Length: 485
Image 1: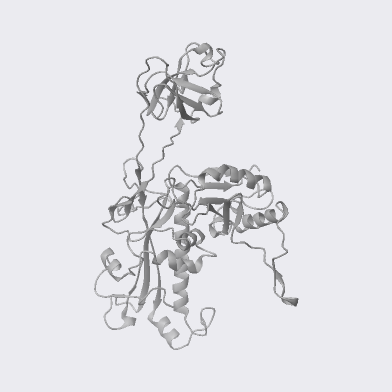
Image 2: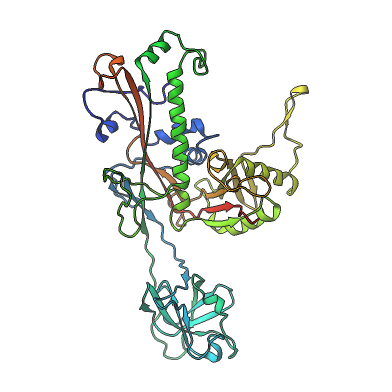
């Protein structure tokens, strides 16, 4: 079985180097994700979906430097993040631990039109602007320009915006991390001065690629046995041919698909966000660079606990994620839910029982060959198209988990919601696979191969090496079942 045009290449009389592998590799940037479609049903769900929908970079190389990508190194790409005219503000404690201060009122903050101070994480809101707090009812009027303070905070002098002098601010709205937003301005009607001035620009994020490699090897005797048809057992016959070595290759590719899928979803970066330094080194002191997967890109996922799929939870989930699902290039507002077989079965049950989905048109075949197909490629609810897929990385067999009282495990209910639309600005994919160097396959030939050889050992090795990453500017949502539910 050939998984790449031209078959394996042979390296002789020299050590393998990165440049050599690139030269002998398949010069198609999308080769690796596309090959892994072979395993999409079992091993590479997310990788395959992104590949099928074309959510992958094209023609990115070592010298790319345009408005969308900047190649910083052989394993580091910067990507443009669309600017948004909307900015949220968060309450943040200064070095003294204060998020607010009102010397005149201990609990009823801002009562009787007393000015007080709050500390936030940005100077986005300023002089004579009004900010709305998280209850969507309380408004604060900013009296002065923001003042830069300790612990990366900005100090705002404010008053309660109200027509009732006794009104004040609930202190829970001023806790660490609480959200606020600038909503309008208000100036005096006579001789007002100055105005609000704000600008937004696109920024650049960092994507670090992860290098993975696999191999299988065989002795000269094993190769001869296959050639002579002397092999019996499980791997002996494949499509009528004795191809146990080719079966080993398929299993290597299958394992590679599994590991790439884990990297794309759960990969964690080994590079610091502030100084861009690789902190992980092997025993020889060499850097081991790796990039973040979807789950750990940006600010990370929003956690959404659930006990199982119900009509109420689905409606709640759609309400909460609606604002994060943008339209794709095909005009659809799509998202994929990747979860375990236990969870997907419960989801389809919920659609049948709680939403009244019938099976009237699901009968296929005639007579004793009739059957019911209860699987769907997608569901569309209130304009949101939901694609649900099972993944081996959300199963008890593949990953560790904690037992629950009903006999299932926590990781059997884990899931990841991945929006598939464009970015906020609408001019790039919100998520896409990326690689700089093409995937490489090659043979380290032993004496069994004859001719030019790389080793005197009576056996050969087949290697595969790939360097991939994922650019994710979406907001993922993590589904999980707490142990207390």
